[in-house]
Image (cartoon, rainbow, N blue to C red):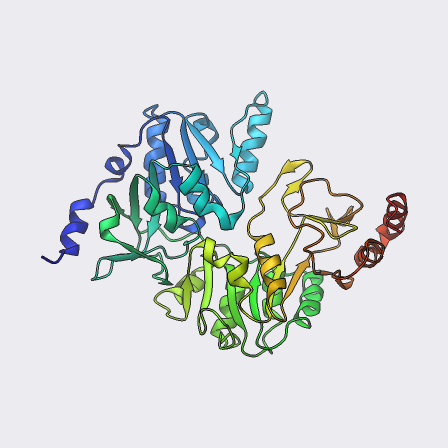
Length: 441
């Protein structure tokens, strides 16, 4: 007998209080990432923690957005809620500051990881009792989609002992490997919250200079991966005159969607997922979410596929554009530590650095402003102040507002001289002295 999907759906609907009632103290809870974090379920679980009904919950997630920061990540809930964050953002940094002011109390637990390995991290090393995630509405065949977030979310949804979904009509329905069947779900709540929007910051004059330099490195027919922020969006804006670009990116952004909408992106030259713009998670504005909804030209896949260098490198002319916190005089990048503390995480930078360079005609680009803190600090430094996110042996092309350097094939001496030339003029003499002290020049 065929399954009556509507009947099964109705049988699994719960109130938010009922849906989180089976979460026990000391258990492990995983959350969808970023825009897929379910507001109603998070509020209900926060209410239980606030009332003292649950304690010592280990909560695993990437990228806390507004729904999570306003519910489970309240300082007064710390201890009862134990955030195990895999990508630090401002919500976690705020909690860490509050803990430091409160007698150096440890309240946030960072889990070092590589984004592409996160599905296996959960399946092999972090058994999850309950997964909470927001999904798009069910279709007539009984399928939800993971919408903005495939990443690790789709894999953990299936490996968790119990899966609770928050169904929201504002979550776009997305093609690709994004389906979730009603039979895989244990409980359902419904909501109608607008998705959080990540509005692009206006690009600075330096951003436009760097974007123009990068646009000249990107040929027609290239396949793009872009990071987040004003600079990558400025790069997208500098590509309006290009033709037949493709998209295979960790993060789908308004800048990339704008290129798709304008017809600059056709994906016709891709070797894998030809004709499709591929991503693993998306963050943007409402116009972007609307464009994604039910759009067969855009597909999402799990992060262990999208960020796999062996997959990335199959697309010819793969261009990866990312940034860094600081780069040393040999080309090594620290993209995650600031002032001696974890600031963000490794993310997928190294995966795309290696995947892009491995592709035929591919280029990996690390682009950044030459200074920070209003010009007080050079981002090109003699030695890194934090861990190596991208090794010097992998760094390919470096771009600042002062120019472009291709580090491949250069000696340490040539690298140091090239990078000093990309530094702000105010710091070049000091960097040269440091380079001599390090026997680089």
